[in-house]
Length: 293
Image 1 (cartoon, rainbow, N blue to C red):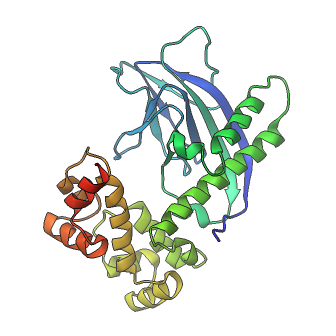
Image 2 (cartoon, rainbow, N blue to C red):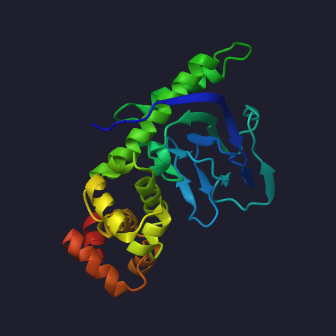
Image 3 (cartoon, rainbow, N blue to C red):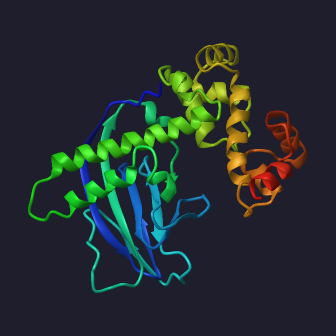
């Protein structure tokens, strides 16, 4: 059973907004989680030193750690820059140029488990409409946010908490499906720091010594404690995280195998091919061909 921490929303701003074509919106996270639903049209999100994330209509993008970012309508020359801040300016019904996005800014208190949640969480329309029907939760939140002059904060906050818990469950379920038992090590602050480093930056040239230093432990203590709590040695776990990310990247035709290898922390194609074949049973190219048929 996947256990999700108690989470309490302390402040919430939610509004249907319009992203105007040609405008780059800069967002300061200020430690608040941000969430965007593509209601009509698509949009792009750009974080520092990260690839552009495209979100199609019906899809969702969350930034649970309050990371600074930019959001805009892709496919248009960006000639204007504007700050996007909560409380948001509502969408103008008279202007149909751009994409309609339901934007939510959330301040919340919780226990340390979400440390393992990545900087960005994206869901497709299909993922939004399956399982716990996150699309319906955000739909109810949007209805309450649109009630001008009425204090619906208690209901809106509870709906935001439900949405956040479903998103955390989604992330933890994906991690578990990849054979990774991250949640088991979160009660130990030293192991939690190591897990966070691995999941945040699997492309780094981590060694056992480097991970131990990051977690504030000796190599031997980290190796013993990590295996006892997580179920496998730290470097084996790192390799699994890298391979999980590699398979997701290989399932698109946008990056070459060499680019995928570099993005998951391998400096040579040969070492990446060897590690991938050992874990997946096929070469990266064969895996991609099978997935893209």
